[in-house]
Length: 72
Image: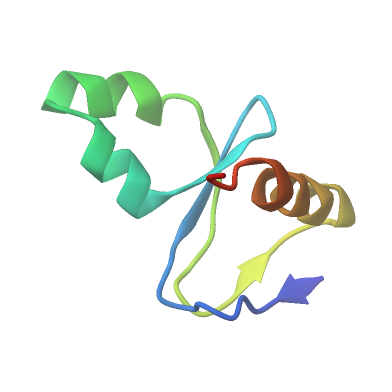
């Protein structure tokens, strides 16, 4: 099942625990190369810029993260 995001410029990375984060966020928050390497061993699925292959469970996780990670 292929899903195109509205903001196709973002690249999503899904970790083994089921969470999904944007690659921009990951690169902004890590401070050195070791931190990137520590996080990269958890990488499970990498979504390309334009189209990502996500299951319905993955889509629910992304929707959940969108709903509950908003700044109030």
